[in-house]
Image (cartoon, rainbow, N blue to C red; front, side, top):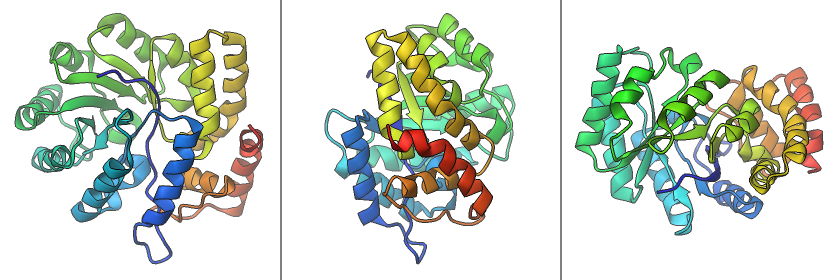
Length: 292
């Protein structure tokens, strides 16, 4: 399959009683579709999967699958700290109808390269599903090394890597080493345009929850070849995205949804609310995006 365009790493809306708010979820996804997204990535870190029960994760996957059109890409987040649990979550996604999953390194455990390679191969052997690797060392504590990627590059069901290290050199290396074998997927939002230049045809994008029109417009502008306009658009997006990367990422994205007139509730503990100063800073950065 071809990974392309802007695919939001979906937030999970919660109501005042801390339950998943599927009415708000539907309204949110309708607005993202109208903005031009190409697919859906539920149950990632932006979706607070770490706070959800297995049943809630199932409900989210089923809801998004039922909402999606046939021409929209579906990638389920199925991460967990143990290989056994990842297999269970991945098998559940496959049962629901997902052909692709996004898998970061198992959190907390910090496996060695040999252990991590065995982890991915065990999941691939257990479930007939396509795998998008997810490299996010600032959060997960380890990096998906090039030795691991070398070993997986010719596996027919390892189709891409979401690169969220924030290191542009990694994107250049991935494009240079694995072009035609593993797709580079943009996951470092504040340098997304640089990733596009280095071969990223898709962008799994948390910020698109609250700035979908702008993110999709940037993607379209780059594809059209108007690089001067694309640079100007990225410069407009940069401040807000850089603020997102400074901390309280999910809280700020949910607040951004509220600013767009599509509230999705608060985050679950341990994630706490934004301060008034944090809201003011992000609101100021969002102003040109709200008027896109």
